[in-house]
Image 1 (cartoon, rainbow, N blue to C red):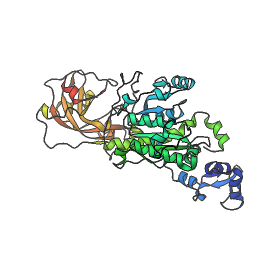
Image 2: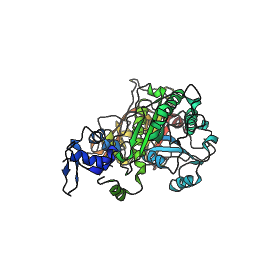
Image 3: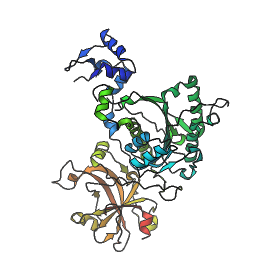
Image 4: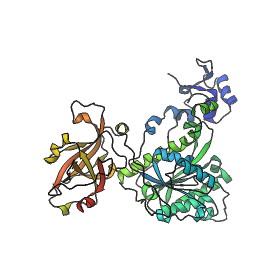
Length: 467
């Protein structure tokens, strides 16, 4: 069935007046129709030469909406304001370790709505970001647009001194995130005949980052009932960009029926974050791609990193149905190359590797007792804090006894309980770890505290061997 678009909707999408959109119909430039409610408008499928409409027809919004982080990606937010951008990024999956804002009332709003966020109130010029160097994945901020000076000849960082963009650039230089983002008004694109943006481009180049070609995104195309347009600047650190990683802009989605006024009535005041939410999901997709090829846990430490308290991440249950949608069972989440030779002594093990300790229910324990287990399937819930892409070893936990045997994880994937229990529901999705016995680490079982839901512990082999 064709998708109906009122003349008002079309005007909003294309940035033209309602009168212009109506003329397109009255003059036959595009076929004009009357829907079942007597409203005149257009069918999107007949407007494919209009770029905004064409993008919406080809959208992968539903697929992008389910993008979720493979691990905790940490972020710093500058010029946080009341938190619109920060909330969108938070919803996408970023864990904010620091938000800086100078306005006291905005900071009060941030703390009230998200008491778990570490809000640093004060002038950004006085903030030292060096304690966070190499410990944060992503940095973002909507820097206020102040007048730029063009006294210098390089058109780079020297020419941004005295502007708040320079403070964002300083934070990037001191933190060295993998990716950073700046957002601003559309007018920055053409300010001073484009010279302002050239200065920013050169400054980003001096920092050692590659700027993705800037793009103006219309909030209305991302389920936000506003005509606001924002210039988005995204830059990827050169060492990562040179490995071939690229940012893909989020696809648009049509915003609900009706005009802007109608949509305000439908979805109220909560949606201005949706544009940031969409961008955030696309950034999470980029970080997932980077992490899959270069597994690297964030080095951020919660305690005493700065003079301000940094709160640990909340523990969330992994959505296994969503995991199935993203990783069909014939696609591996983790694949570890196994040595053909079995480890014969403890010294031959790699004690830096991560180990997942899991409780095995009594009814499934026999293969583990006999050291013949070939697979482990999780319960219906699995903690999101476990870094799936870093797992290497597996140790079964026997209730009332503890741990004894070490296995290596060959593959971690999404499967179903039905693979292991014949009468189980075929849609009962679980995480499946295909494992291979390595050796018996201890002569007898060693007790260990299961730290996550009394079912799992995510640690490393060095800690296990030190028991």
